[in-house]
Image 1: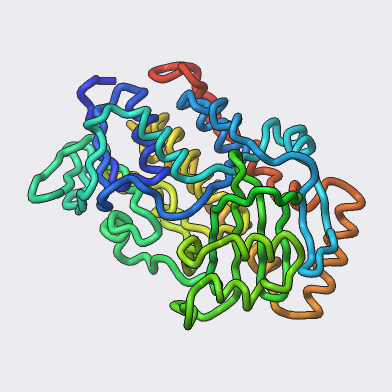
Image 2: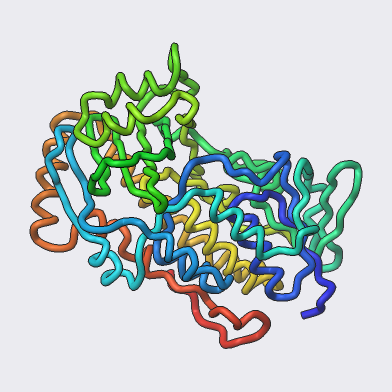
Length: 396
């Protein structure tokens, strides 16, 4: 590959930085354009499953990230009263998928990915507009701050409301509201012992998980109309909705300050895109396949996208062929999971809980089963195999 090949990445989130790092490792001259004034991420924490950790192995940081794993002992699914429906241990997850599940602050991963790039590669406060997707005879063009940048490859990693996606596929309906909103908290919680868990209630869920360094990551979701906000503050809203649920939820809420609570409506791409590319432009992450967070795979799929895109950077049709079927399937599973755990029908909840308990007694916990065919993915090339290497067929 010519060393002068240039890539412009629109978006400096996890997917954008991972793709820039993967392309840089293959000799591309990479520029990342982030419209925010800094790379400080939106969101509290991120769950990385073995599939994404293998992709990070390609970038040379997989083991470092694995060392941040904090889940020890049992975890699983509970009812609001505290009854366990399904339990599984960290060792069982590692044995089933060949690696751990790691929960870490988003900022940690963003910082580590950014460190893989030359300092001048990232431009913040840079709003980019795709002006020409290019084709086989001409480069793509991006306008930023009155300057036109030409590139052999443009990567649209600008999130669920991607302007790059709209430019490529103006007839696509875009993201839709998933029917529920989420809250997230990342705080210190010294002296409180608990088992990692997700709790399913009536049209509501809560999760509490340890993060290395004595912190806890908690998230909640509830079925509610789009655009809603608490009349006072979001901590008070969480107390109203979850304050009488089992321990350690009351302790988490007591320790959180109103300003610690992030709230975001969930939007996803319900209609798959016709392709993950057009011309010399490729889409990845939420720009290509935004999905509900119910499987925790949004960021994981973006990291997968990044290493596969670097592998197929000169053949974007091959990138679409490798990624579109897989990400569509994962997104559909995430939607099905949301329907299961966010249902508000009392009869359906009773049947669901009975089935989960029975299935978990008969075999691997439902929590682990939900990752079958997802967490066992392997990248198409290995670390150090940057330029040529043996091409491996991507798992789907």
